[in-house]
Amino acid sequence: MNIAICEDNASDANLLVNYIRKYCEHSCCQYKIMQYKIGEELLDAHSPGMFDLIFMDVYMEGLNGIEVVEQIRKTDALCDVVFVTASKSHSLESYRLQAVYYMVKPICENDVKIALRMCRRNLVQNSRYIEVMVNRESVKLLLRNIVYIETFDRALLIHTKSHTYKTYLKLDHLEKKAGGLPFIRCHRGFLINMNHIQKIEQFDFIMTGGQKVPIRKNGRADIKQAFADFVLGKM
Image (cartoon, rainbow, N blue to C red):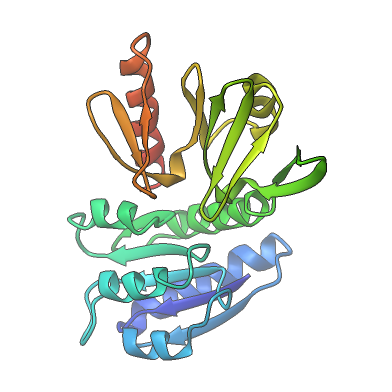
């Protein structure tokens, strides 16, 4: 794992380094740690795919941690981010920026372990794919890029962040292939990736591309609760 620490407090930075080293060496996990004292230094060094995980302090001189991650997210959607802060007031912003974890100081070893485990899990998850036939050709689609799948006539439309693919499969079959969370069957004709939900309305999910996906009437409260639990699990 390539790990960045952006923290202006030397004591907190040293704690993070020590806990990361302890975890990675105990887990036989290869790692590299890069440290930055201010957000501008991190932004100057960053390029898409450079880091697997960033421990990001929120309160710093110059750009704060939220502003730094907003800049990073414009070009890098896959890097995991863990916000490290003395306040719980930024938890909703951390979800908007797709942070995997939210650590409240004082830093404890168990929180660092949880964050690193989540990152390792995501590295595996981000490589998972499904293989479908499109126009008589086999196409591999990364699960992380699928926003939602819908039934259309006798076919399925698989909506990714950049394309829509039409295939002739049963939604039940693709639901099993997706393998559960972060996918959820919110309607008889829709399977959605909860990582791509922008907001929730009374009867619909609004996806990151602005698409509106209905929530079935029967079990609507349970589906909304499942999404709430998913969001809380990432904080």
